[in-house]
Length: 498
Image (cartoon, rainbow, N blue to C red):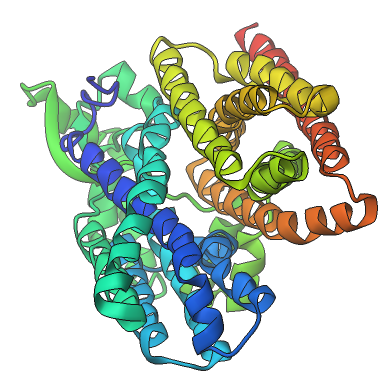
């Protein structure tokens, strides 16, 4: 498929390499989480702990990879993406090596938490760079990379199981660490888009903001680092006075001699622009923002939004993540409580995964046909809500298998919803990066809360049916927020067209 950015990005094919890098990372991230199910009993024995503690520390890589995203987004504003991703890969692999030889449960827990932070250092940059390459097809390209979750959950546990039989507990962790080192390759090949510089007197170029005038580029190249240097301000004013008195414009003189319509130049796809207040503050200080802004103000600024619609949708992201992870965690126990034997109950999870692959594939096909994602999410959400609210309809295996299959289709279609919503409601590149980091954060909060709160709800009601019906109510709240957002965006679009 030819991306719409082919005409403006020189290395647009490299975007597919970044997608494959994220796919590889998700294979490892999902695989390591599922692999702990194979090593769980052995970890309880070697660490001399109980299943509750071991279960908690085994969930840390997944949750910390999401909760650490706002911090990583702030680091990315000051540090190169490739350097951050490489550091995350080294951190995660080193911590897995320590886990192979440590017998202290606290040390293992800290190492697994740092492993999740390393995942975030690679996951977030690759996701944001995919948006740089494919701003119009970001949802579809991001969905393609999510197939890595299914692949990792399928193959990595099998490898770990065979490794434990052949090399034991230590060898299994060493092999996991070795697999994690492949993330270094993903970090090394991260490359930002290189834009084509379009002729300045082309109306489309000025509209898109892809170019700058020769005078702007010349002044940017010759401007000294310190604006308060002696003579700099006087020389600048003198040149401006000469230019205004003669009525000449250097950019127009240079353009008349240009014969080609497009010139290539290494320019970033997205230039992070400061807010007006930051520009004024920087101008008055005479130095760059990074040298004058205190770190605590920088962190506070990175975790706030000026767009209320982003904040309006964050609760829906939390509730959807809570319902999704609660469903995945208690799908099999719910079936066993209804009298279904354990071997058949496990097959429900497989059926849900097959339905998820089907739903995600259909979603990609519809998106490639330029179907509005909201027109997909809303009806799918309604079907998903009904399957949870009608959980009491039957306890037979065919009924449970049908519900699990439909819920798999719905959930793994809707798990792309947060990305699509954030993409729709944020237009500024800097705000998009921060909003996407907060999206990961609220997803991690929902995933972390799902196990404890859903388990507590079951202890209170002693009924998985009531637990699943509560999830249906929460998904209805998500549907209301989603529908309201879609209506507001449609109204805003009509106002802009008028």
